[in-house]
Amino acid sequence: MIIINSRKAAIVGCGFVGSASAFALMQSGLFSEIVLIDADRNKAEGEALDISHGLPFAKPMQIYAGGYEDISDAAIIIVTAGAGQKPGETRLDLVKKNVGIFKSVIPQIAKYNKDGIMMIVANPVDILTYTAAKLSGFPQNRVFGSGTVLDTARLKYLLGEHLGVDNRSVHAFIIGEHGDSEIAAWSSANVSGIPLHNFCEMRGYFNHDEAMEKIAEDVKNSAYEIIEKKRATYYGIAMSVKRICEAIVRDEKSILPVSSIQTGNFGISGVALSMPAIVGKHGVEGSVPIDLSESELAALKKSADTLKAVLDDVLSGA
Image: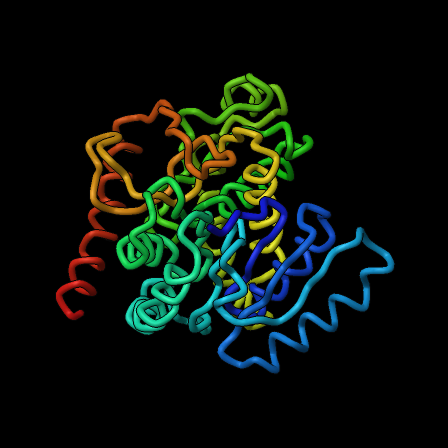
């Protein structure tokens, strides 16, 4: 019987996102062991060596390149493997390429590890989370995606800049697809308990709708802008991966908008998308109902329908 090591993580895929995540996790001190797996073994070995050389400045740990057999006792398996998003390409454009990659990767993970938590980071994250859950046979609470955790951080950052306050005091969520149909849930947004519109007026802003629309659009287009300027995004998502891992390893019961398979919330089921959820040592431990306006709820259902249409296309072509 294999005993899961709560201080061990595995990262499958050592591209920009995988290697940046490995670096962020090394600095976090959350893990005493990280194994890196990549189709290009040399790439995994190079990243492991490069990060290892900084360990005298960090907390003691072991980071090394390995194979799927090395994940058998990993508490968290972080899957970043997949083709990257190119300039002008949407996350959904990636779907068939990356579903194909997952059909070889996920069964290998499930072969060696039955009891860990699988976090999907590769895009399109909602489609791939659903795919990973079906291919792995893992319980749904132990397969989820990074979802809109980064989009939500972008929203908080931009709202903090707009209002001139610490973005950590801003409480707001991006929900739905991690992509073009995502929704800013303004109805439940607040700054330290003060409804967002009230706080805006305290800061001298009265043209709420126009400002909020621009901020939501900027959040949605952030990845496209970064990809256009530097070909890839990886630091923000690496820090999001670290944040989710903190919630799991420390059993924080943090509320994070991760992507998980929905089972009837707001009448949505049979698709993975992001809604606020309690995240702890067992993975997704429960959903958190938030207030949505009629227009937000309609947009959420439309987002779910968009993802379902892609899933149907992928599954019919399988």
